[in-house]
Image 1 (tube, rainbow, N blue to C red):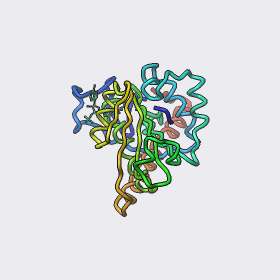
Image 2: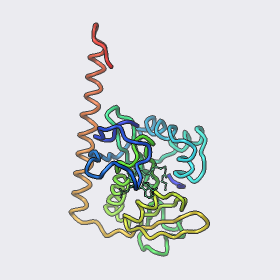
Image 3: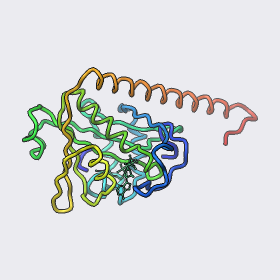
Image 4: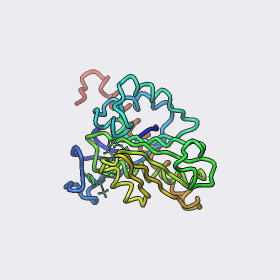
Length: 236
Ligand SMILES: CC(C)(COP(=O)(O)OP(=O)(O)OC[C@H]1O[C@@H](n2cnc3c(N)ncnc32)[C@H](O)[C@@H]1OP(=O)(O)O)[C@@H](O)C(=O)NCCC(=O)NCCS
């Protein structure tokens, strides 16, 4: 991608490494996943998430194996006033998954500009911690990004990835994206319907629930920290 730990959201079981089409994690057993919009205050956690990706994942996510230094610069340069970044936290407030929705004028993406009359297009990049894959985190981040696009008057969501990226290709196909493959790379486009009261409400409710989930986890952590500071009380 060019744009843009372990228990998930409420993910409460230790997940396997990859999930996968042959995974034994049935959809019914998947944990509830809360997708929260991140602010610039999350930069440290974002960096920790990206630094934990191995070189293969960095290649899949960014199109090249970014060094730790470049990842640090990437995180430092995320423009939160222009773009939107979504995250899924575990109970220790580590980021299990991150989706970066980068907005650009349509001229900036010539391959997309012909198919839209809107002024802006959006490019989506996503990564999920290896320990949290196959639980639906990536799909939920994608769905949330698509709703955001609709609600900010964008009708084309674009993703660029390696065509060998079977998991991402699966997610893209499942979402109904049109995929164009070329020289080992793939461009995927999703045409989105306009916003309506239901899409607005859906996003607002999702954000409120995710914020509540985050607040509960943060308060619990603070309470545990305070408890462990009391003499004679040990934390596991
Ligand atoms: C791609 C990525 C974000 C997916 O995250 P995830 O949380 O594991 O994804 P989900 O659990 O939502 O969905 C995975 C889907 O792929 C399917 N899948 C897994 N392995 C597969 C394979 N080898 N072939 C086809 N489908 C596969 C799963 O069955 C699941 O489908 P389902 O929801 O219909 O059951 C994650 O693997 C990742 O971070 N990879 C490295 C970075 C990357 O590739 N980013 C994308 C850049 S374009």
